[in-house]
Image (tube, rainbow, N blue to C red):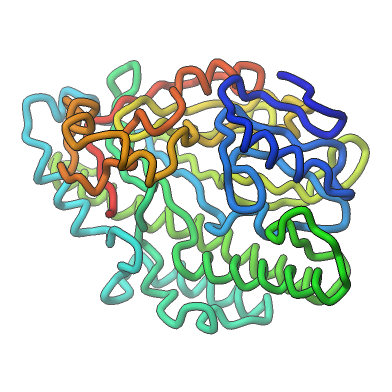
Length: 389
């Protein structure tokens, strides 16, 4: 860990100047308490750095939560071992998962399936209690539950160091969560203009606790966070069914972990109750299980938090980009992607060039930097990878 200023601590050994400048700008906001914690996977983001932990007194910066509210990971450890898949063609399993879970931006379910019904009812009741109708953001939000999205979202079947099979996926609150986030970012920016607040970046516009705008944001934020959590649960149930069918036996779930990495919670740190916005960071209280994925084709990790107070009990959420998507497409080739994915069943398309492992920081270095934030419980290696375009 390096103290870059009184209000900025960094665990990142690999970081560029633009990202550092962005983090320093956010750390100078007057309501930061006691400091911003920069995670090992930090990289440039909208307004605030992805891979940062931002504790604030009496205010929240909506863009510092991230536009995919509640984005995170879920993993299930099964009773099966790698022997059950050895020597088998895994293409049918990948294709079955692709049929069961809508992939790519803008894609959603054609109907509400039975497993989604109770989750949707739960979200309807939560929205009514929060005093808003999610349909004002996305009239098809019910059909979005159980869909993956695109970018770095994925579904994987992996094996750990003992050969046990894990099911692993990454997604968030989909289109409805994105629209909720963008709506409140715009409100914060309008308020800043109305009150002549001079911001170093328009995306650092904030909402003040105690105002109607803040209260409504928190209500809708919490709904979107719960949507994201249930979205992952719904997709995981579908993946479990496909694996059960493929292997000819029911999956015995021996462990299930579900954690956000784009979210806000009210927590107590350094003597004060603060809003902790983790934008690309997971909660890592002592003993808390967590998930840190690598990039496409590399290892992922099941971890346990160490409760480091200087990090505000946080840890990285993944590898962190080194190349933007456009830069990755200019730099790397389809053949290099194929080389990186040797031995892994995946949809072989140049649409995934911007997700090539070389576009990300080396996950081993990220985990080394996080040595005082989490301990590694399991190292997962991919057998099957499913992604949307």
